[in-house]
Image (tube, rainbow, N blue to C red; front, side, top):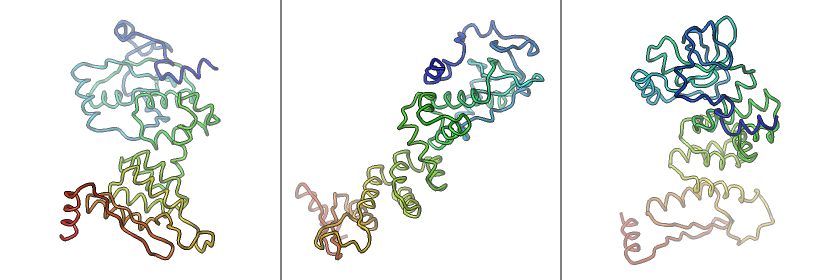
Length: 302
């Protein structure tokens, strides 16, 4: 069991026999009827079913087209991996891009490594292969981790050993699934980064999470700027709190943090905005020399 866990951490290649690519052509069987587990054979594409455990849900059309052209010119360099499901039918374990590109290229058959694998092993291998190749977005990884926990009854500690990631990394991915659907879609579409999402998830209010997400997209906020907004929210005192001294300058509420940020961008300078609990405060514009001061005056007069 321990050996298997270590193998999974090293990626898909550690799970399969180390067959050299140069020897592939010599190992391909001429008949799928003679295909057995542990062998490499040419298998008709129509005999292969997609992997129902495939964690990746999106494929880049441009890169898929490039792979299709490469296959037309050079053929399949690396076999896909399948398992037999009976009646001369096979199920894809890994290599879905090669499988899709081969169909687009008009191939009738494809070289495939055949192995025995349970549903649990197929799910693990599909996940590990894609993670190692960085083909999954953060939400796809999070969903895959969650599915492994639910379907295979792993603890987060066991899962971290299985996929070769530390437990904190696994936890951070799974937490993303608590975000509203709109934010998860934005993360999948590349509108925000993992860093943005990890900052947003610390905000307890869903409405506020959605507001911050909209600001990130509309204003192209950096992760650091997002983290600052979240800190302002976390440090904001409870309404009607009598514990704060009356004259103490409070951490900016989010709407004033936005004003501060907009001023800084408009002036192209560092701006500080401070406000006390009565609404009084100061706006400070920082400059390092006379040229920058003249720049500020010019911007204000415009």
